[in-house]
Length: 189
Image (cartoon, rainbow, N blue to C red; front, side, top):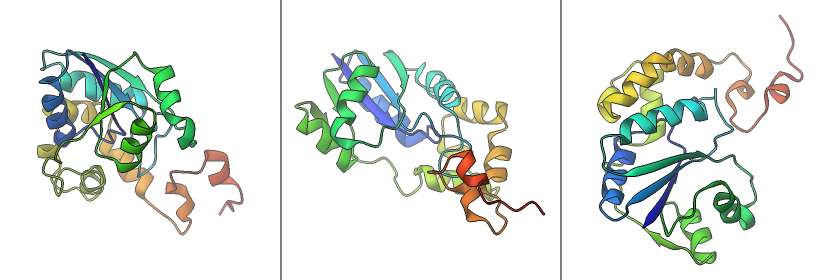
């Protein structure tokens, strides 16, 4: 049986890793969908799809589980989102998610969805981990060691701290604007 699990994985952390470990007990193969694969270099989504592929591939190699890591760009059309996912991924039998919208969309498409308890959610939340990186606080204990290595290799902390820096123009860290939109109207000083 093949399962499907999607996340932004910004970064891939121990909560995700615990979920994959649990899923590995139920399936023979797992498709890991990298959501918002087209977003990077923002406070909300600092890492590229390729960097997240590295994080995930290295971290899940410890499991006896065939995995397929698939980047999925946002299409911002919920009514056709499941079809988009299915067109980009190997076939799967069951989806895993705790996100209410994702659960609803898969269920409406007739796909079985399995949920699980969140793992140490207070500590293992991507936004909290990213903020700790920005603030130079402890974060390494919240991600698998292989993910620490990837983040250090790509100088991810420096990038995240840089993109989170702000002058008076808040639009420079807005995740939903293109580079051109962010630069439009910028006055050179």
